[in-house]
Length: 421
Image 1 (cartoon, rainbow, N blue to C red):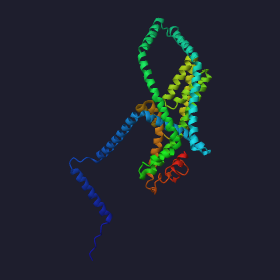
Image 2 (cartoon, one colour):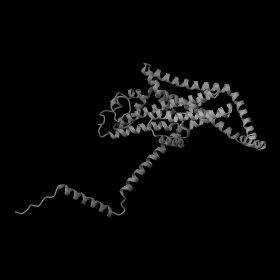
Image 3 (tube, rainbow, N blue to C red):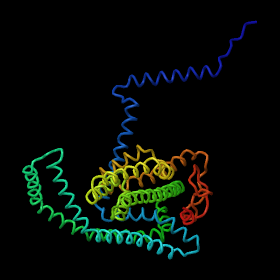
Image 4 (spheres, rainbow, N blue to C red):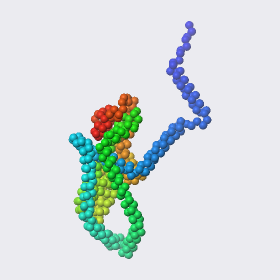
């Protein structure tokens, strides 16, 4: 009986057909003249999309610059809201009505600011004559040191330098007048900005949940739950950052004020207030506060105590950099120091001092927001979309324990979720 032929396995046939199809496709691509490689297409797609994003960011930057007199007070109000939010929620938990808690929080802020400036102004006014006399004496001592010290500069040369400085100051009088006039014109807009910030702060504290709920209705229904949860986590990170920044600024100011009092300076309250306020501006604030405070102590108490004041500031900055920043800001906002440094640099290039002030808070919010959106996209295959609108139905995708996590769980409303921050 003749032997039957052994049939080929189906897998072998499929493999041969796949190889044949691949070879045919490669041959077709090689035979097509002028065909753009796939890698070039992919790079071009990424490139034009990045260009569109950059153009959008540039357009937003131009719009913000055009409306800076409105945008900057609004951003200041957001930061102040994050700073006062824990106080307002604590008062509400103790049974205080929302309106009264908002008013009390605003009064606390106003009393704190006016109290600090009143004490500082009174101290500077009481020491102004002594400061002027000490400045003149220090200048005379410096001139004497130049002539009789190790440099042994002759008096005619010193007089020539002094005359040059005097002539330069006289030539700058017109420019100083123009700057004073410009500053006077800016005073009105400054107080208008303060008024706008205070009004926005009141409504953010009083109706923040309602404003957020209205804004969330503009987001498409399919992605609303993810965006709401990401915004909530970004707000948690922003509140934590502002609270940590206030603590760091207070410790910096307290250390500088105690150091100034120990060396015998009568302007320790002014040094405390200056350091506390400037500490909210990263990098530049500490340098300005240290320079001004050391110069004041140097003029009024001599170079020995000026050097001691400089050492005090160096120690305070080291305490901030190696203890306060890692343990407070590091835990509140998980951002790499290199990202913070480049964020501050870019903020300074784009918006000057204002950009430096808002760079790290924006990084804190954006970092938490992006992480939350990424976690939602990673879990999108396992979590079914909500059956109802989380905003219009009064629900907010928050976690049961009120802390940021990897996946949302329906609980409470938007107002309840925000109140728990």
